[in-house]
Length: 226
Image (cartoon, rainbow, N blue to C red; front, side):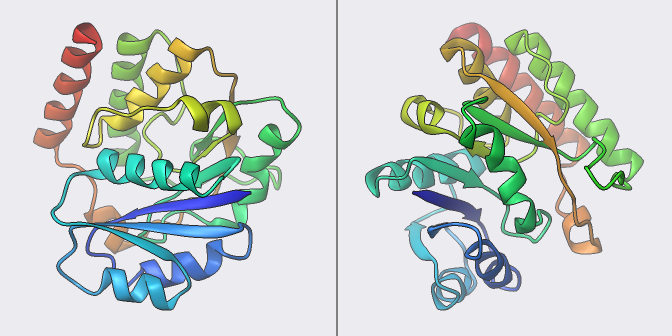
């Protein structure tokens, strides 16, 4: 059973389209409404998702873990996580799932910076490449593992990874924590080039430099304390 988990915070204008598109490729969709103040929950429900609502905003990591736990209770054998803002193309789900299906990987990371089978790549703004590069370096320092797009929320957790994942970090630093989990549990990793759909809306949601520094410091501190 393949379940899509979509963390969402104030995404009423976008989440319905993401749910509808994802349902074509999965058996069920879980949207974790992370304390939204708009109609995210009702929009997601109307589009066919099962909605879990946080009473207050807990962060992307907390919402993702809530969704993973719910998927486990449903009996999911694999989970795909994707963002609620239409940045990720659900049509890439079958290719992301393929390494898990042929038992070649326990976790699959989408790679916005790779070349897809059609020979095309993504045109990614320089500032996004810069922040992602910092995230990758911090992840390498904290985990000893290089992942080309470590900060992407688009991932597939196979049976082993789904059973063992236990995220403790509530904010954006959870992406690095997942890499650390992969190293600690010796998960087999695959990286699959995917399409990214940038718009003024999605670009405006990126982390500020200050928040990026705070995230990096949290990652490094917790990597030594855990």
